[in-house]
Structures are given as structure tokens and as C-alpha cells.
Image (cartoon, rainbow over the protein chains, first blue to last red):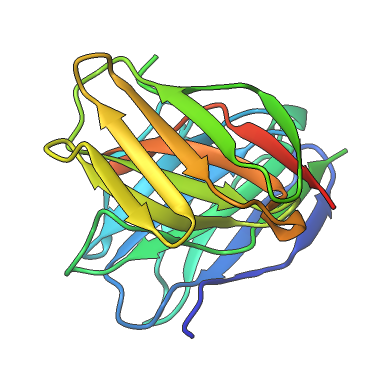
Length: 114
Length: 108
């Protein structure tokens, strides 16, 4: 069964460093998303992406964040200068044109900012 | 907040019992969805109920929706130890807005 894959599963970084979280969405999907979940809290929407541009972003998704689809398969989230409070699980998701309502999630990347 | 609130926050039951989780939301919806999250893993879509539906079934899952009360419930019948996970409701409005989740523990 096709699935969304995320790498790495765990990323440790120093405060102020840049990190890139990688995702390979399901191959025929057209809509892509990033969510985050701080330990013990809700899953929060960060950004959605369609047709090579951001469709919507939340107030969490400030200038430190960016997304890119550098080729036909990868979808990346970059955090330019990490802060301690960026420590969280980051989930990538994708959905297809037929049913945009249902999103398929990757297993997540745990980001630890020290 | 646009997001849902689930109750209870945690639920512990014996295998074979039914588990009921509730979700309330504040704004109007097109649909409401339920997702499951195993510890440290991603979210898995379970079921979607549209605003014009009142009840939906999928295997051992039964979801109800009361738009007048802005609430939904997820019932898992004949629970199994493998059902142990966190369950989230999510309102869809271009993106998903998740609730706080219910942590379900099924004791074998």
C-alpha cells in the first residue's frame, strides 16, 4: 500500500541551526501539508501546498519556515534558525484530487532542538 | 479556538468492552473526521462523516454527528488490546484542525 515517508525519523540540532525535514508524499497526490505536534499537545496545521505554491499557512508558519518541492517526489520543510520551542514531531501529509478531505500522514520526524 | 475538544482525555477499559469518545467543536463543518495515532507514530484516517449525515459505520467503528449540538462521538465495539492508541477528531476546512485527543488504553 502506498505511504508517505519521512526522513529522518529523529533530528537533533543546536539552537540557531538550519534543519530540513524531508517527505516523499504518495506518488499521485497533488496536495501536501505539514503539521506539527509539540509533546503532549494537539496536532497543529502549519502549511498546505498545491501546484508548486503555498495554498494556506497558519500563524505558526512564520518567516523562519519555508517549504519546497524541489523535484517530482520530495516535499521539504526548512526551518532557517531553529529555536528551542521548535522541538516537536513534524508530520507530512498528502491527499489526492479525488478526495482532498482525507489526508495520509507520514510517521513523522521528531525534531529536538538543544 | 476552531479546533475540537475531546473527552475524556484518557479512557481505560477491559478488552471486549466498548469505548466511547466524544468530540465537540465550535464552528460549522463540512465534515468531521476521526484519526488514530499509535504512540510516536503518524495519524491514520479512520472515518469521515459529512455534515448531512447522522451516523456512519465502519467495521467495529460507529460515528455519530449532531450538528445542532456541534458534537460527534466515536464508538469502538468489542475493543482489543491493539486498539490502544490516541484518537482525534478533526474538522476539515481546506486543512485539518485537530482536537485534543483521547488516549485509549485497552487492557488485555
